[in-house]
Image 1 (cartoon, rainbow, N blue to C red):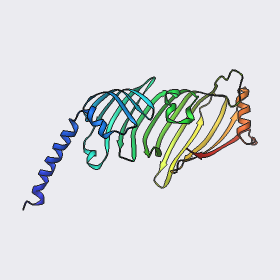
Image 2: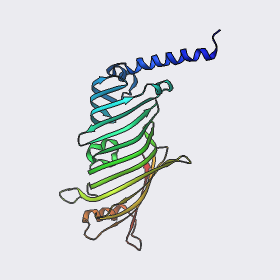
Image 3: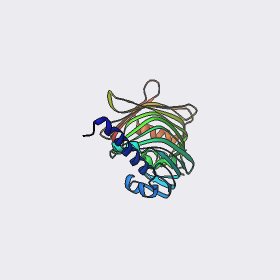
Length: 257
């Protein structure tokens, strides 16, 4: 009977051979077996290990010139793992992606694009204009909902539809903002703080919480500056509480997505 020590080189050789087969497998065939139906690729070339797609669609976000370099070893634990990068119509995205049947994790993720380009990722962005850039050390999705987010999102030259019709229904300039996300192993859910960066019509500071059950809670203090658009001021009066002694109005939103 062969000892366990003698079996080890055999097992290692078999594993290396399987890894070679997976790595050299044509990407055009492998992605149909291994990639979820929600991810659509066209013009696929290369191998599972290192490949390229002329175009892709992920969660209705259109990508161009998608490139990846993966590792076959995580497949033995039921995961896909790769470094990916792609162009957006007016920006780029890059990240290290690790995916299992129920979870997707992004590490060292970077993205830059216009807000309209990214609006398919969140209903909150619909109708807005501006430029978005983000850097995330980690983002984890469980069944499509964020359970871990650590990083920063910046919105520049943000414009939103008027809360109250301003006749021409022109977008209202809100200025620049930053949102900082944090997660903790001791406390489930995702927390964020946000504030304006000055120079806009509003002074804004607040918090956002995303619960594991797809619930959210937003709490903000907002104060319009002198000269703010009248429809913006009217909208704030309608949506917020009475101003405090400093002139700040509280906006609280809760619900589920």
